[in-house]
Image 1: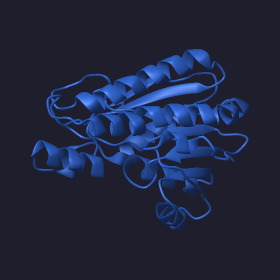
Image 2 (image 1 turned 180 degrees about the horizontal axis):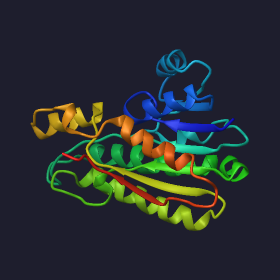
Image 3 (image 1 turned 180 degrees about the vertical axis):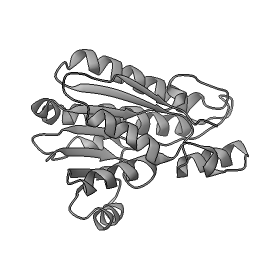
Image 4 (image 1 turned 90 degrees about the horizontal axis):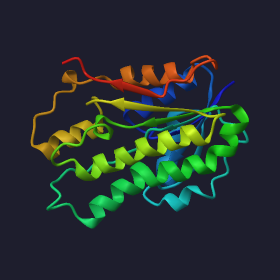
Length: 223
């Protein structure tokens, strides 16, 4: 039975992935930002272990008691705040860098002994913004470009651990709905990639035979 540590299991891509892994009999370790959120996750994913750590405070992940062996760590949590460089506040920058970059780096470090023990896989759920930065997206894109650099460095440093970055384009999640509101656009979920499709891509990475690794996967809507 494989054991997976997942952030962002409360909604979107992370929720779909967590459900599919649990339903097929794998063990889950989930992160929740508060005790209240942890109670919700325990009720949703019966049998999963839920730990409390607020990714907005990356130092909160350091004391986590993780299993001795982890087959994967999937970094699915993220936050977004759009705006021009001329208007983004320090808080806008710091919050996105903390949650989207510093927290994954810290959690990966904490999980490395367990990942090495299992010769496991780290999956960073990045974004198309991690490849190209557009106007209004500077802070978010900077955090995701940094996440790409983290993955590339980790891949070279840890030869026993497989490292994959997933770059979803616009995906029909609550975050995408928020993005549309910030852009002042109408939101139509049917126009974008389903979170189930991205979760399928992640499952393919996790289930890949040990004779290969997939370093980067881009998933874009067909519309």
